[in-house]
Length: 214
Ligand SMILES: N[C@@H](CCC(=O)N[C@@H](CS)C(=O)NCC(=O)O)C(=O)O
Image 1 (cartoon, protein in one colour):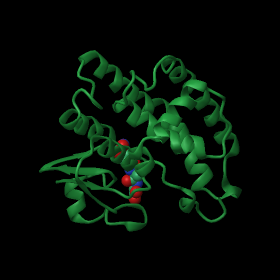
Image 2 (image 1 turned 30 degrees about the vertical axis):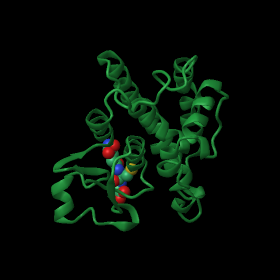
Image 3 (image 1 turned 180 degrees about the horizontal axis):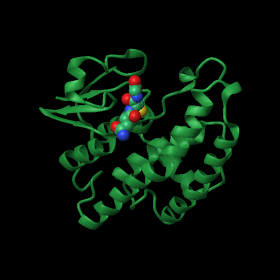
Image 4 (image 1 turned 90 degrees about the vertical axis):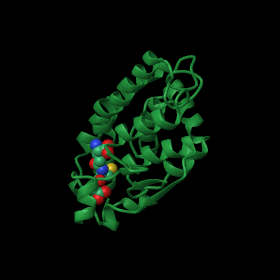
């Protein structure tokens, strides 16, 4: 049985659980991290020396880093589906995964999400939020062009690319930031929201994560 450690409100756990849901894998998820704590135990340190979530144990194979976990699960359980069978298509999906981390994650999560949800309004850097939101809008124009004529990033089915980039979109679309109209990205996000695994694991209200005064 697949074991997943990580609270459901963590964006990186959501990414893994979106893949788990798409792949239809039987699993147990353990609430650790955030208000649940338990990351500082010796047992958890043995599983993940970074003491972060997510971590998985896939029938004895322990792995951390959410993108690596998604790739592993997709390659093991979703060849020809979430994990493109064609080598070059897989490489392109992999590139979009890296792109999500190197190009979007910092601005959406480390700046917009942390400033608007985890920082009291009086201490907030509104200029940084506005600049980050603007950069994301510009970078999503690249994705918008990729989605022209495609339902998902690499074609008519979701892949690991949609899992990684798509998981960020729920926060992007639900934070109080300015967004350009990008019909390709908007339509793709609507298709993601229609997927049961996305609804269950990614569309998790984050209002309860607001700190006092945010
Ligand atoms: N690069 C790592 C980042 C992991 C990470 O930063 N996890 C955060 C949650 S999103 C965490 O464990 N924070 C501490 C906590 O939840 O207590 C990955 O993608 O798995």
